[in-house]
Amino acid sequence: MSNYDYDLFVIGAGSGGVRAARLAAGLGKKVAVAEEYRAGGTCVIRGCVPKKYLVYGAEFGKALKEASGYGWSIKGAKFDWASLRDEIQTEVSRLSAIYEGVLERNGADFFSERAEFTGPHSLRLMKSGREITAKHILIATGGTPFVPEMPGKEYAITSDEAFLLDTLPERVMVIGGGYIASEFAGIFAGLGAKTTQVYRGDKLLRGFDEEVREAVGAGQIRNGIDVKFGQSPVSIKKIGNGFKVTFEDGFQAGTDLIMMATGRLPNTQGLGLEKAGVKSDEKGAVIVNAQSKSNVGHIYAVGDVTNRVNLTPVAIREGMAFVETVYKNNPTAYDHSDIPSAVFTMPPVGTVGLSEAQARAKYRTIKVYKTDFRPMKNLLSGSEHRCFMKLITTGKREKVIGVHIVGDYAGEIIQAVGIAVKAGLTKAQFDATCAVHPTLAEELVTL
Ligand code: NDP
Image: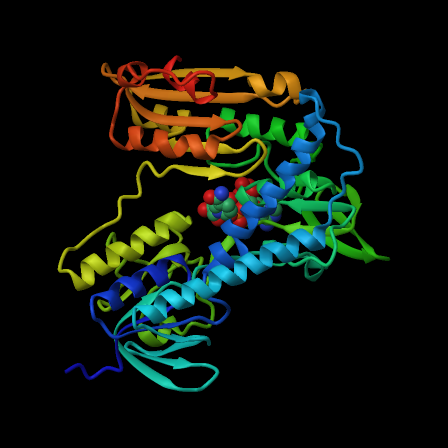
């Protein structure tokens, strides 16, 4: 008989936490999950899911504009922000309820309140004040938006609030050049707002392949986004119903909405890590080993709170590996290499493996194959968007170590290509695969 209230207590009902809790409960463990906001976490509530719906919404706008090239005449088309926002929130609520239901069906207790550590094996539920003990504790509290200090920063929203806006403003300024900034600039522009994206660097999406970064920047501009490079805001002032943003070089610009997409931080503030003796790094990320174990042997952490690879499917795999390690006597480290991912700009990015710069730094010999073309669909639609593809190989056998796509369906294509890269296939094996014609993806086997 255990002396603890629970075998496992999970803090945070996001993708990683719920998967681990469900699997552990399914193995007969006594499990509880605490969530301070809504079950589903960032991905379901204010991330991947509602974001993708907004991207779909923006893509309809683009399709309407381009439809005349295909013989359609559409008059009087109008966009209603409130209607899309509410439809998305209904779907988000449905999914959140499913997350809670999954836990309950598997026999886990769900506490709809914040939990904080009071000791290495104990937590307090902050609404009820109840103290709970657990043999193992899994920290899966995700991340939270980071907004740099500056006068007037309280006037800016983050992606958390973007989903719930009362109205779609006429002018929007998105600050940042990363995933969230680039995706939301595309969304706002696609839905009809006059959009500016301001980035302190000289190419969007730092860390991606350089040519991908250039192609994404060009795509944003083709979508009518006013992209300003080499600028960082230093202050925000409220002027009437809008705002005035001042930048480092003194440049000033007016807008109706400012969205800061300046990164995310691990969500550990006030969690009481110190009371449990759990170590975190300078950003607040829980420091874990390859099996997601913290410096305290019975406390683990998965997902964005560890700030490794901050993607939903990675958090899920880490949660699954935790269950293998702790409850199946099978120490499992999730392999973080060759993770395919997408950025849902318009057109989107799909990427897996090394960028050209990373490949050059790691291998003595690499070969790069690339193509840049105007997709067939755009010839009739009149869209100026292009498709860029790059395939990087190494060694005599020409093992494929990186594939990068900026073009329609890139997110879908890269999932399948990811299998080939993960399997270590060679360029010859790509070439031996028959093309599917006419598609964008066929270029990958004819490069
Ligand atoms: P990113 O780290 O991708 O981007 C943050 C951006 O903010 C960078 O362009 C950064 O500039 C800029 N920035 C940071 N600090 C400042 C500052 N003080 N002043 C001005 N600019 C600043 O973070 P995101 O929040 O966009 O995304 C967080 C994570 O969420 C991603 O890394 C990704 O893992 C995940 N995500 C994944 C998505 C997907 O898979 N499609 C979608 C959305 C998020 P610089 O480059 O110079 O540092």
